[in-house]
Image (cartoon, rainbow, N blue to C red; front, side, top):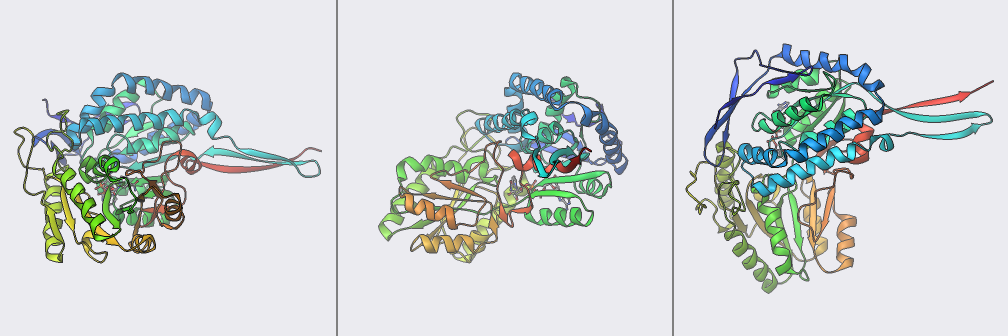
Length: 487
Ligand code: NAD
């Protein structure tokens, strides 16, 4: 496979970066070099912002229905290249090809929903707020927005924002994750074919410096960020100081409560997918299974859980038989191995040790871990409280649902929480009381569809409106209020 050198896409053209600072991206399954990604210069960032700024007046005056036709063309191209787009995600990230197909499908759905913008961005009005006076709200675009993307859904996450932003009449800059930048490069090849006016969408590769240059630029109206909580805090503060709008969707530590009436056999597949899908590198991954019930029920659950986890096939995600791929890079594997070590020292019981590798085929061990399960985890342990972002599950116990909810609400994150039960009463109590932005009832991965906002509370979200759906349309527009009287 040819080693690519990624370029930036600025003002409707592919341009090689002038930077000689390059980072390597390797395929985590085979430890093979895939591409070099440039850490673009400030001048290049500023060029992209200027291009987006220059494109804005004409783009915002383009009727929404015309703007959407570009998105409809993009959808066609995404469908045509569905397999290639999915393969590249697996190649640079490591997730299974089936997970990548799911990511591509979700990404397309974002564009589909955004292409309804002529209906979705309409304002509202009231005749006769006083005698002979009418008032109305028009939602207007604001200018240039950007996104700072994470590595774990390299194709989909920028599309939580980009199609909505441009459908509303804004122009946009994507800064992909330097760890997995190829998916966005391939997406922008499609934008190039779509023939959007130059400057409407731009791609600038890089890491923290590029992010800072974007956040500090006075012509950027707002920033969307998806990534870890510590970085999200920095982004939120910087954007606040600079008076910019911001959505920061951040880290997670998701609990899954197993009630004593849960249907264990039919739930196990969705639990495995929640805890170990995407190799645990999802902000919606299950991390802590919190089991309510007596010793016999707990044992029945733990035995089934450990057995199912031990049977997950781990290997190259491009192999259709594989159910879990590698961690995305060596540093991630080392970090997660360190977490396992610390868990043992904290006194948890290692019921399944994923460091003992059992891999499909002859892939090198470089980035792989098998599923790991800890038992006897208590809510005060770092295992239970800190985001691991790897294939490590912790089993905890609670005496009843009240205690389970107290434990969940006592940790700093609030991205997702699920309950497995056959009781409507328990499900309703859980939905009502749990402090999480996305709640699952017999659902292990609570991924909101593109037409709903993506929730998140406490340290899992900083901002006001969320990504996706109507929320993100409000983010990318500002209501202008008009009050009129005619003499
Ligand atoms: P990260 O925070 O390391 O990086 C995210 C982005 O921020 C990247 O583009 C990176 O280049 C940039 N960045 C890194 N340091 C920066 C700094 N100091 N200043 C400005 N920008 C900086 O996150 P990651 O490891 O790529 O992604 C994994 C994290 O993302 C996990 O914590 C996961 O839970 C979270 N995530 C959250 C959601 C959600 O919806 N809440 C979705 C996906 C991922």
